[in-house]
Amino acid sequence: MAILSPSLVWPLLWCAVAVFTGTAVLAVTAHVRQHRVRAAARRLAAPDADQWIEDVSLRMLRRLNREPDLTPAARHVVSRALVARLGESRLRREAHRGTWHGRIDALRVLADSGVPTGAEQVAGGLHDPDQDVRAAAVAALGRLGSRASVEALVQALQEDCVAASRVATSIAVVGPTDADPVVPLLRSRDARLRYW
View 1 (tube, rainbow, N blue to C red):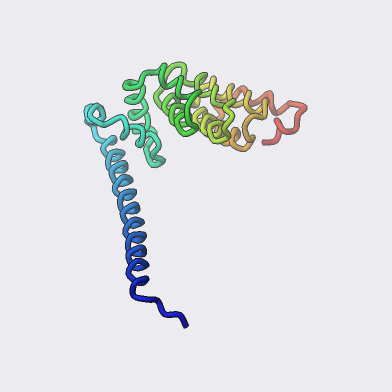
View 2: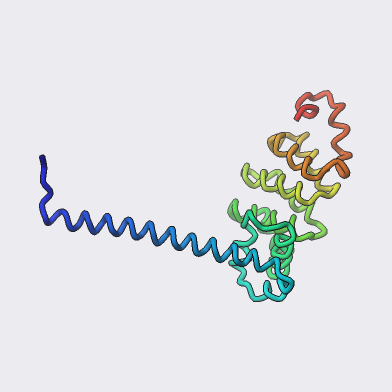
């Protein structure tokens, strides 16, 4: 049985404490950040949200945009604030250049803000080389719910650039009122277009 020498015990104990406290500090920091984001999301439901959002930092707006628990109305407020601060042209550039998560964020903002050219800008994300960006574009087009977004989803289905199940889910979100472009697919010779 090997016995650790006292000169070796203290450095090992110190490393163990450092690793534990470092992990604990990271966990607490992540928890505090998440708490701040959720508190800000709750604040967006208040009647004075438009005034409050003017004082929020750009970094916090970007974090709020990524928050999955935001209501559609709160996401719309955050997206409009980002469009106002960054500008539509910058968001269009970010949607097609930069890191993959930056492209996803820009697509979300363009879809959720109600920008008039949002559907065509988001549809451009369907041909992105990154699969995650294409999936985000499909989800954003489904949230848009316009006829132009359904047409872009049908085109993506025909071009087979995105998984058919993702496209079908987004078309289902839109509902049958704007789904007229889907009807011709039911008579297609290609079985892949009829059964998805």
